[in-house]
Image 1 (cartoon, rainbow over the protein chains, first blue to last red):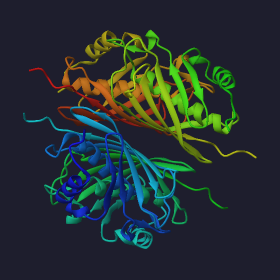
Image 2: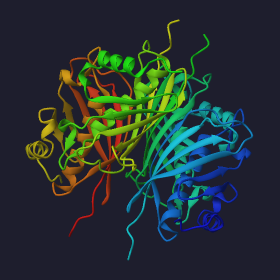
Image 3: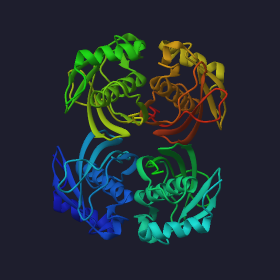
Image 4: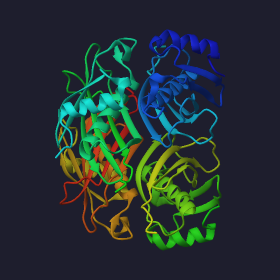
Length: 140
Length: 140
Length: 140
Length: 140
């Protein structure tokens, strides 16, 4: 049972990360899977029209954040402690990037999320990431 | 023996990555060590004035790229294939982030670079990354 | 189309890695999925009866190796260049560990394989790994 | 100020990990650096006389464990939560492997340790690892 609807999560993101407003969208958010997208935008491009590594990292990071927050609610201050990311193929020019995020572990003090990134319309992953978020102890 | 001076590398970066112009500087570049900096800029901040994870990833990534290119010269099209990054401490607000990059392996088909990130003026690393760049075969 | 049957792969492993004979088995090997197991053995245990981290690393490593070799055939000398592994839960005592390996990228010079590890009988992953193997150029 | 001498740490390891007795030695252990070694032993070899990946992983893992325990004392039950390891060169046959471990972060709930591995007598690292150990809360 998630603690946010998609519109609630979008409002929450706008509030806590105003710098990235308009950069990401949420397509699907349920217990099994979160799907987010990085909108195609020339600011994230590299020569040849490909999406930059940092932009793909940003998408993987925000997807793991959203997947974690959806489970613990908005009160916690969570931070990324680790990311391991493999860049496997060149993204296609002019396409959004989609992230499929699955929470592999939701512990009391940390979460581990697996994220696969795709160019929209392709089923060959462009990147694969695993992210750990640290969840501070609650002040009950 | 490196294949670029600092001004040559700065011109090269401006040409290949015009999107990030003004974001990074090179403090030192020699056989043993590369020092780059991410200029303090409100676009990279998170609530509380801390530098965002994606901005730190970008600095680590560009430092590993510059360290690799300095050894192979400007003709090669290299791409990041892997990054593993640990975020260890909160960067200090209002400070540049410095990256110390050391090339651990410079092979024919890949390079491995270790990068430590610091808030300027502190000797406690805020993040630690290892990046692999793939170097395409030369068309000799 | 794989280049080995399970018995052929088991013979090949016995020949190239005689040190680990009897340590691993192959349950399933097809285009989509490889399932291998680490047989329960007191040599791999830690206090409390749990399987050691190095034993789980070994299983993930051999699974990525087998998944890669099944696609390229026995002639290639491939080596692990990277492994990122998250240990998420304590394995159950007295159980085999199962590895589910999926090849995410099978390129000319490297493969990337995702591996999930489970205690037999549980559907909660105990560890999650991503491994890169380097494939040397063919001498055609 | 470390909480163990080298002989105390060797006794502690023998007690908690009897399975690996005789596998590792401690050369140096102080605030700045820990040096451990994996004794040359045919059980860790691969064809061609090179040391196996799992044996190198084991050395990096035990070095990060020892470096962490030296700082927190023997009472804590710590576990590896993450390891990222790059295998960069083939170790030389017939040599011990040396690990140089440096603790990058010693927090209340986790430690991060950087480990470089060398074939004895060489200054070119054969592998580079970063390990995170989770430290359970104290029952004060």
